[in-house]
Length: 397
Image (tube, rainbow, N blue to C red):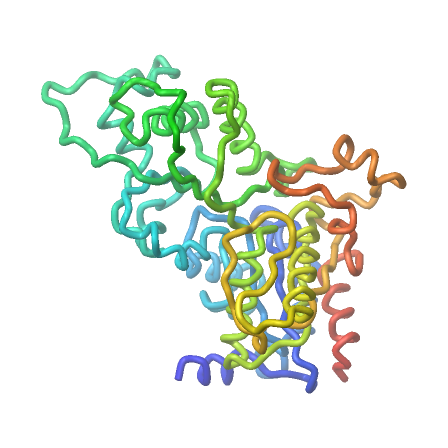
């Protein structure tokens, strides 16, 4: 019922060749709260005369400080297009599938209504950084102006923390770095002393590994990936070991693209899509991720068995097992030049020798493969990207 109604109201296909579209947001459609002019022109071409989308369309952003309906409202207002929450995938959206953690006590880090976000995703026992600091007031001591006054009676104790969820960059980095290390090195009991020789590390689920992102400022801003870099460095210096992640979500992880394709199929009443077009401005996330997913799709369709498929080498081991008929055949990456990518500084000619020093800003766990950062197409802006996909799909508009 939902699918039929959604399809009738939102999506109509212009050709027999089935296609779906993934749009990044920051640097493609907007920069901060400012709409990129080409975006509104692009969507006038992507809608029919009844303002329905010509193709299944999803907005995949590494933002994670809000919920899907808020992001849909924001985009609808900025772009003057009706966008539903079902068309939005945030960096934390795939956490809905990780049900094995939903009944565990999780510590959450980030901005915005993190408790409500976690509850909506299925997590039942949530502890925020503020709650942890309140229960253990002696742990957060960097800012002298915020040194706590000890309560006359100790607050009710918190349960042992069993996992950590990193939604996005926090406001007070020093507080979150300190408390996260406290929890990691005490196996979820920060009232205890450090044990740097713990045999097992608490599971860490991190969303959004973007080192940089593009807002209104003329140069890139630090993203959550920068905070993760700090956390990894502190952990490594204190323990001599690398911080391990149970999963990394958001682009360019495979699970995020699988989830996005699932959303596209739902718009298409679970009919298969042949081609996915992924439009983005970031070589390390949008292009790398789309190309990694294209490799994965090729392996899916080359595999002999119809059960669990081979997984492309790279980040995102927490992928969904699926059967043959439903996945798309290919994913085309389209790079636009209105955001993080600067055409004035092209990729070096000898990418194999210099990519790590001059170009690669991806997460530590990404394999720096130059081929994965070569877009299928490079265009000026999102309007040109829409023109390209309409041409590719044989639209007569």
